[in-house]
Image (cartoon, rainbow, N blue to C red; front, side, top):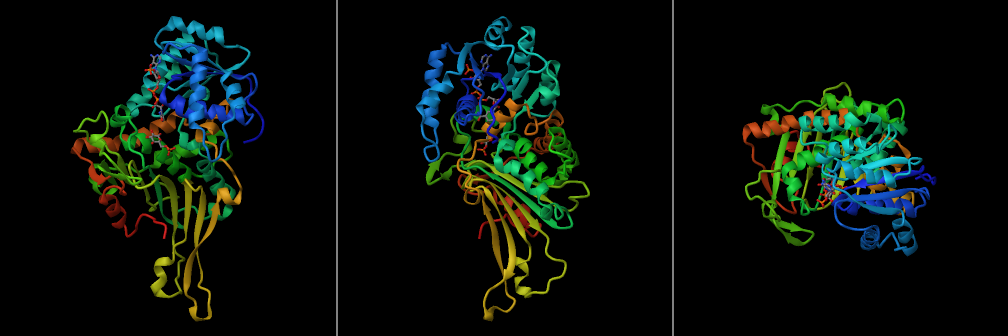
Amino acid sequence: MAAKHTASCDLMVFGALGNLARRKLFPALFQLDKAGLLAPENRILAIARRDLDTSELRAELVRELRAQHEPETDEVDDAALDAFVRRVDYCRLDFTETESFNRLNDWHNTEHELIVYMATPPSMYGVIARNLRARDCCTERTRVVVEKPIGHDLESSRVINDELAEVYRENQLFRIDHYLGKETVQNLIALRFANNLFASQWDQNHISHVEITVAESVGIEGRWGYFDQAGQLRDMVQSHLLQLLCLIAMDPPSDLSADSIRDEKVKVLKALKRITPDMMEQYVVRGQYTAGTSEGRPVPGYLQEEGADHRSSTETFVALKVEIDNWRWAGVPFYIRTGKRLPEKYSQIVIHFKPAPHYIFDPDQKHLANNKLIIRLQPDEGMSLRILTKDQGLDKGMRLRQGPLELTFSETFETGRIPDAYERLLWEIFRGNQYLFVRRDEVEHAWRWVDQIIRNWRDSGDAPKRYAAGTWGPVASIAMITRDGRSWYEEA
Ligand SMILES: NC(=O)C1=CN([C@@H]2O[C@H](COP(=O)(O)OP(=O)(O)OC[C@H]3O[C@@H](n4cnc5c(N)ncnc54)[C@H](OP(=O)(O)O)[C@@H]3O)[C@@H](O)[C@H]2O)C=CC1
Ligand SMILES: O=C1O[C@H](COP(=O)(O)O)[C@@H](O)[C@H](O)[C@H]1O
């Protein structure tokens, strides 16, 4: 991050006592402050409906920030904690009570820019927006941050987007997809467009297929109420995995402005091939975990999670074969998979290059002939390019050997602590830069594509296939890629 602090801003956090605010937003704001990136006059108003006063809230924040500090990379710094919580005030407010919004005007310094963060259920976005407008709490320069998921399908996302659009222009809206705040995800743009080596090879002439895996070892973490209504397709694919796919598949933007990048992503979303009912068996695998083990401990199945409805057919795993109907990607499938309670947490993209057009080496070694670029998004952030070399030694003749050109960010660049995605996103919000946020049309095109799969599931009465917690999902996801003569990449 450039060592320059933010402009003078007042930040209002609606839903400040909720899970997201406590686990992600306040820790990220604290890190920005500790790094000297918040302007001295920046203030934060925590807004929620519990009966608390500012000193009680500050004491709670101190306790939680202490409990959450990262012991390997971070020292507890009492002075920094104290300075941070002194920026924070508390306001008790029910978001539905228009009158009470007057209190916000008493707090806001109108010479400061205003950022409104809605860390609330999406059903509250329109309510808060209208109440802020009714009480003149915002201007045309106010920035408004909303969380994913925007809706449950195309129709409901339009309703939410329309409610926001009644009050704010698109250039005031910052729709979060926290994957875009990950350093390694932003690096996809640098990798592709700063290295002509790759830029010139990035199409169907040179790439045979692409894999995107976002594996989670956690289950649903007590979020049954939310997750069971969503499922892994809505929760992960509609947002994070389609964003990753767009960053890999998009054409070069003409510059790094928010709209140039978003325009290119939208073109990819529009070109996603529809998955029709007759394609479902070959292109989509849906799974749900049963009891098993996670990190050596026994864990319950999805239907035994706290609060579960034992008949639920919500998927906790999904694998898809995605095709993009355009010139660059004709005939290049993108195999994507994501699931909860998989053996480990990692996110990785593998680009499989085509073999050289004419093969002159030992026929027994032909299976080695494809270069691969492995992009490790998390953990162990870095990249590895698998190339072929001559095996060393007089007796080896022209035997080939595959080896890595390795770049592990923490070793090569001594990066130290990697900022959490929310730190980067909040920093960009303070700076008013929208390039890491999702535009309305991106959200809606992504829903349009996801909705047709959900419709197909519903119309066919499809039930998820079972997989034991701690395994790589239903075997059908292996069969899906094997049918094409390929396999999910595994580290040798
Ligand atoms: N938690 C996470 O990891 C993630 C969350 N998100 C999104 O972030 C948003 C917030 O999620 P999360 O923090 O988990 O949700 P929570 O339910 O934990 O927090 C929402 C907060 O809003 C408050 N609230 C709701 N209605 C009102 C009201 N009428 N007046 C005052 N306060 C109200 C709730 O107060 P009360 O407690 O009193 O009901 C609660 O504290 C959601 O849109 C979610 O989808 C996105 C990605 C990850
Ligand atoms: O948005 C979400 O993301 C998390 C996974 O995020 P990560 O940064 O830990 O990879 C996921 O667990 C959650 O269900 C989903 O809502």
